[in-house]
Image (cartoon, rainbow, N blue to C red):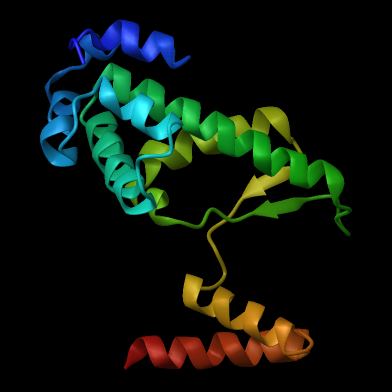
Amino acid sequence: MDGDTSSATRGAGLPWDWAACAPPCTRIPRQFGRSLGEIPLLFYEGRIRRPEIAALASAVTAAAAAGDPVAVSLVNTGAEGLAAIASAVVRRLTWPDGTAAVAPVGGVFKAGPVILAPLKAAIAARAPSAVLVPPRFEPAVGALLLAMQAAGVAHSPERLALLAATWELRSRT
C-alpha cells in the first residue's frame, strides 16, 4: 500500500481523512498492527476477525475520549448506525405504554459516555418513543435466558425476578 490513507478510505467509501488523525488516533496502527489505510480495506474484504475489530473499537473510543476528531467522527457514525438499527426494531414492535426501552449491550459500551452520549442523541432523533436504559442483566444472563427459551422454559415475571435476585446474590460473593 502506498500509504495515502486519504485515498484508501475514500476508495472504501469512508468519509474520514485518516491523515487528519491527532496523536491518540495515530497510536491505533501500533496497537492494531496495521496501517490506518489498510484497516477499511481489510474490513471490507473480510480479512479482519471479530477480536481484531473489538480491539480496534476500544482503540478508537479511547482516541475519541482523548479528543481525536477522526475518532470522534468514527464513534458518532457508529452511534448513528446503531441508532438506525434500534429505531427500525422500535418501529416494528408494539410497546404497551408506548415507550421502548433500548439497552446497549456489548464491549464497545465499556467506553461509556464517548459512545453512549451520541447513541442517546441519535436514538432520540430517530425514535422519540425510545429511551436508552442500562441492561437489566449481564450478558451471561441473556445467554441463560436464550438457552431456557430454546429448551421450552417460558419466561415469567416471577422467574425473571428470581433470576435477578439470584444473580445479585452471586455478584456479592
